[in-house]
Image (cartoon, rainbow, N blue to C red; front, top):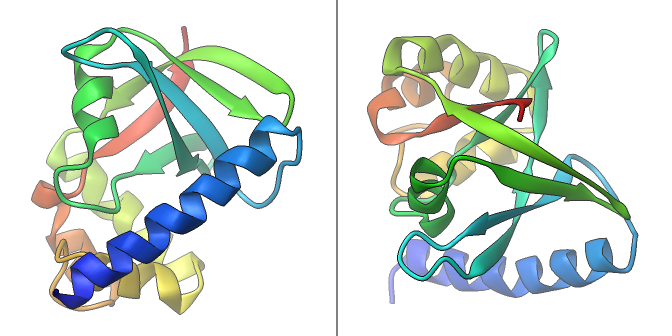
Length: 148
């Protein structure tokens, strides 16, 4: 099993805890629950997601290759974001690659070092530096949270 697979298993276990806490109304950090219809089944799927404020807007960054939530969001018109006991229907607008680069750079510059390392561990970036993560913008989906 690769390091990325081990990391993914650990994160999946942690995600179950985050979902349970959020559903109990306990909100913490930037974490929210993203609920989106499955692209094939239409059945609502819920994923814990970090919603990051940058320069007055809110963004969601893909942290894993082939993330199911990314494909589902691309197929859906609207999603529901839940933080604690408060939910809002919203739209996620995927940004073009060139608009992603400065946001990815800023994310890594202003976040704990673990954020840059996560992009390397999951195989999305070559190095945990702001420049290397920005250079990987073609592989990292970035969505701006917008009103529905």
